[in-house]
Image (cartoon, rainbow, N blue to C red; front, side, top):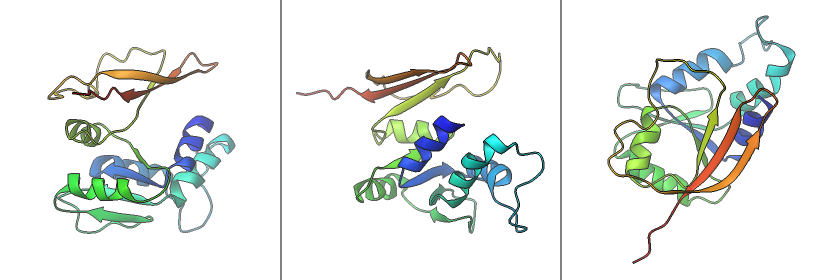
Length: 161
């Protein structure tokens, strides 16, 4: 949680699709009582506070409105993301399964970060399944955690003519 908290703190904004936005909001939005729920452990609060206050952009064709420090991205999301990327700052942090695939296909991801857990689930969505073209990556960073998880960061290799 400390690792993801730091990653989100360095981003200018978070970019989610509808499903991820709704999932994150239901888990991490601070209640109107201004008190975190009883199920939340003390070590989770810094993450919760960081994601709660972060600026968010939501790509959705079905939502009519968003809140929770969020702005709805409509129309050509590729052009919208390109505009967001051109704004000054550290960049956008993207989460989810469907949206990263679409952004990868458009060549709009500057860095990929994968957190490999020491668990075999045997089910669930396959990350970047259906990618139109192979994307060569070069390693940027690697971090191992006591839990056995490993965070791997890569950048796409730019092909020069």
